Length: 129
Image (cartoon, rainbow, N blue to C red; front, side, top):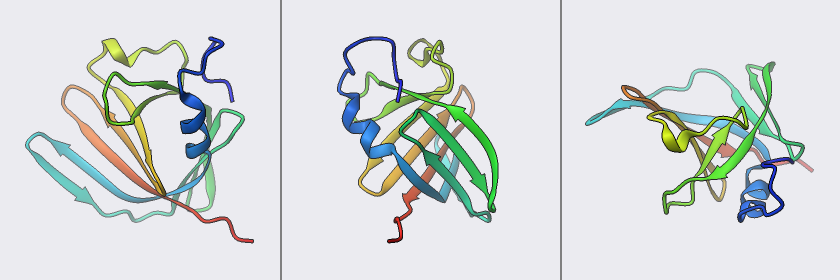
């Protein structure tokens, strides 16, 4: 998986391994400070992060997108990474962006901007043997 053009992975190898797999959306939280609202999830929404650097989105059994992705460390001390779909983007100097954080079998993607903030919470799908 190509994450950046540098020879050092900046500690990304462990997060690359932890994000690869299939994840099902279980909760969506929309909010503007100070109020947030958990929204019901009415679709079968799956994100499949592949080791080749692509992410596939499947909604109700139909593939809706396939994109390349890159991860870069954030300047936060919370274990989160910037999630990029274009390697030339730079959220560090922006008021908006996307972060990703893996905690065991929980994946949280936070999409934010000046007036909007949405958290997407996913659970890892178990591989059937």
